[in-house]
Image: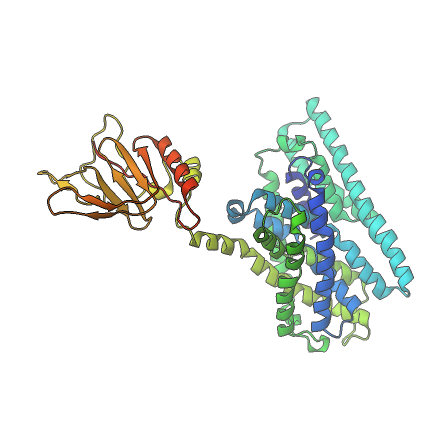
Length: 500
């Protein structure tokens, strides 16, 4: 589990843009420090209220496991296809960097709680927390990881310049440096998670490593395999039988209430208050999403396991507060992680489904850049033939039929200047055979006198004339209508084909 976390943190550091941490240090400090502190205290308060056998110090220890955003779950969700399409890239990068930063910073929050529980006096507990928890674990881990990353980056550039290494070997060192970094820092007893993230950020600080490993999928495949194996292990390890432990005061309804309280109060209030100081978050909706998106997963279980190893083995029933903490920390953290993986894993698909409910078509600019044969929502209409091509013998069944078209002896429809409508899109077009077409954002009312040509009784106010054989005019028409459209009118344009 340690290797999976460290590899994921190293990958986040490498994949961030050049010097990202230095350019966005203000936003990360606002998101990490006050948000973590607020969530730590609020989560501990709910744990203490719902599980009264745990005192507030023990509740702080459990809350320290649930406070950080899990980088493995975060990377798996925001790196998916739903997030890539529907979450802005600046927000995805900020959430990834924040999850990598605060996962390593969970050590000081955990250590102060453990020291206050195990040490005889608070003076000794605070002294050890400052010297060991902050200076030796956090500061030394960051410095050591940054130095290893910079040294590795310079060595790799030198060996490549001399021709001692090729591109394939360059990519293979991706995983080797992550394992080497956590091996060194774990041996010294420092924060190996922060060291791995610092090493990944340092090696890609000047962008050289990113350019050399561009378009390579080896590291992503390794990261995916490790993540899948870790989640399979978590599913097999999940202590379902401990979710009902009356001797500890743990019952399913208390666990459900705790999860719902953490989901609503752990991050959302602080993000809604502080988002004005974070330039990457541009609206309260993005702040609400950032506050909601704080998954708890592999990191929470790893920190809970680490805390349990620092405590005495509990008796049955527990005889002291330390034993109550050792017996309760695993089932409480495991249930919250189980709920977080399900809720946060489905968050982005639900958000994207809600956005698509309001619009049934794609924008013209987006589809023209993604497809060369035209936008998806124009496929229902047959395009007019190019020069030298014969006209279609009949109107296609998927094409909106022109109103009051004349039928000749061969059974073919001859189009005059007329109005056609598409009932689903609610867009009308006035077609002129062989000439330009007029597009409107509203349907027009067409009346016929029986044998003569159709008359347009009312035409929409916003109209744009385009050449039906010129795709560039379609883009200009879309831009013109979009600029003139009000907030209450759908911004949709369609080109209707004529005949020659």
